Length: 542
Image 1 (spheres, one colour):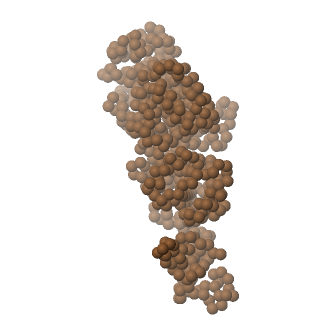
Image 2: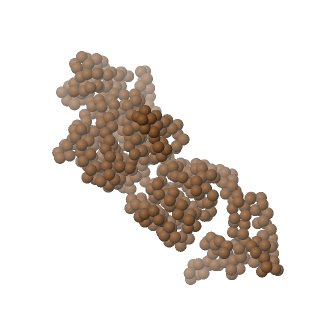
Image 3: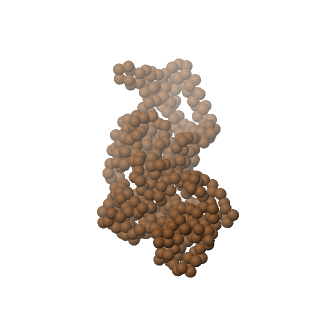
């Protein structure tokens, strides 16, 4: 491995090129945009990297020494913007990621869903010459920018969820269409049209009731309407900042009970404050892509804090917690930098004008290289550097803070892992399993752990014992009319429940079913009566 730095563009600087590089460069005339010719172009600095004597194509050179990348951010995407900025900074400090050049971050803020201003910013970036455009998060703006990048053949990297199953040629997408859950009947609450499209596939396999959250912040009328469906399974596909309020109002109207189950689709489930619901007994499950305990993530956040302190600004607490979108943005920049690092021919970044028909001829090759990333442990040459052959190019993968990054041929991220989390005691989230694209859900909690969790959940709770008068199991005392509550009952089942409650630490209330029936199904209406009906309706004592 031979690395040279030319501080100025002079013939003397180019004379420093070793013979191995001169032999490699003869495949390109000096007058063309190529490895040797690029050194003669005006430049502040240039880098020659990984020259292999036996592989004339191994000379990797980016003819633009400081390539720029543009980041378009919605006005409220503060954390994503910070992730973008610090990703560029860390890439530039890591001599193993981008050894022969340095990235320059160009950042623009645009109003949410303002395609006009976003297009102006993109045109300004293209005019200055950028190697890629990142963002934004809003759907309408992102689609418009993607169309512009397709026309100019400039790489466009998105970190937002995209419901489309196919992508255009010059765009890749780091998130993924969600696929998790084995419930058969449930209610879905969503807050956007995109959410409706995203979850529409579920209605093809399961019995699903879908309702959109109303505008404003009062969801109780909708939740009361949902209560009549008598379901105990709910999917919340709403923005992370709305989840807490939906759960709080659901608790107010009695939809956060022991037998209720909520699945949160937000990948920022671990950032939601669930303290208020820790005693509800409700099963609240979610997923996360980013492990907040990952050492690399903790180090990154520490760098953020220190960097901002040096600039005289103290980061607020909410910005010290990495969101999934911010983590994806960080990984996107890192992946792009590694792709530039592994380019096998010189690349010139042109200045493009939106009014012209010009486009970037190398944009497609960069996106193609990004799509073909998968895992490969590179060999090490005698100089300590990583050696890749063209055949090995499709066996590399970036290990980012969101896990290993791999794309399918359409440019969607594939082969990822999700942690399955459940709210435990004291509102502490516990990892109970993992989900993969190939293996689906794999719950790692043992049977004993499950049993212990159920037993702990019974502590100090009051259970309703619905019963029919059936001697000698359950009977009314002779003077039951003068007695109240459990004191009215006696019998074998009554004594058994009492002893179990002492062992497990729960309370109980006996309730006599009105028709003294165990339950039968009406053939015409399909409705049940008796004990079965009360179990289905979760009837509480009057």
